[in-house]
Length: 362
Image (cartoon, rainbow, N blue to C red; front, side, top):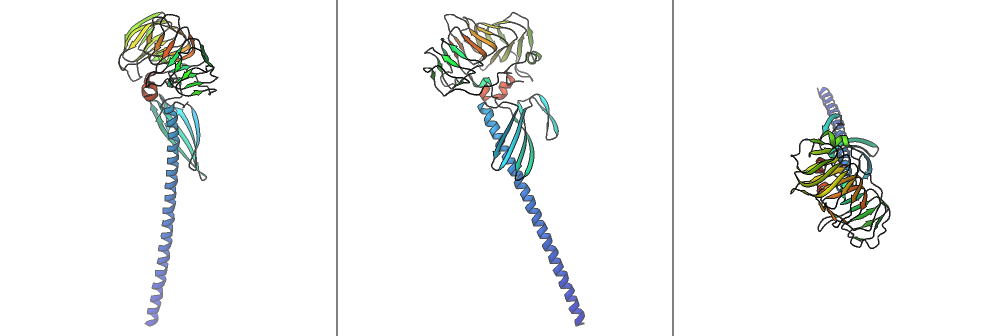
């Protein structure tokens, strides 16, 4: 009996040793699995943080107006290399993480490839478009050299008056005053010019926006014939496509009081023959594919002006005051010009998109 008992005890001991070994192996396996899972979670969080960091850079570029799409942004966040392809997908169909999507808001699709310790991770996100690196971040943007003996002033008390000139600057009039930064892709030949901000020369040129007439005609609430006279207008409330458009197929003469926010698009020549006023909190954008003439009666123009050709100030006894901003291919001065500044585009990119600013919409 004792021999049997001893045998039983030995068997039990072997079973216990085996069980302990199995438990130990299981615990080691579980611990390894936990560590692997934890490593994966940490790596995933590292990638997410790096992606967030890259998108913060994109957001800063949008806010400061130096973002131009499409763009591939290559940055290193910590020890993660991030290559992000940025594509504008406003009003278009796109694929987000394998799922079809569309949006009518000003939107960027960010497709990132992240690399860390030999591992590669793909990620896509949709973010707000913000403010493009466009002509509309300046009180005055001219896509050619500016030389004049007449006075140019920008900004107003408490408002920025940045100016961008794509070429040399030569402003001889002592009354010229840039109330902000003056940036030139050439040289500034005006040593006595009063500039409140920074003077920058030999800057990298920006792309000048070229509006597509068919885009504006397709959303117009009214199409007017050549040689139309627009003496004020009451714009209706915005709809799903944004603020309303009056489309002139040819030349137009413009003046008067405007109520509500809207756009006047002129395919030919736009003559602003008298002062233009807008209602409180309303915005008027005048887009001309060709020449804009400011005639002597146009002493105050409460509007954003875009000229795809020359913007001419005609000789007269009164100077011209543009309340919002000017974007022009070329500026030809035969009288003094003052341009203030309105922060709508800078501070409200969604509103800028609804206002259909060239280079921002569509």
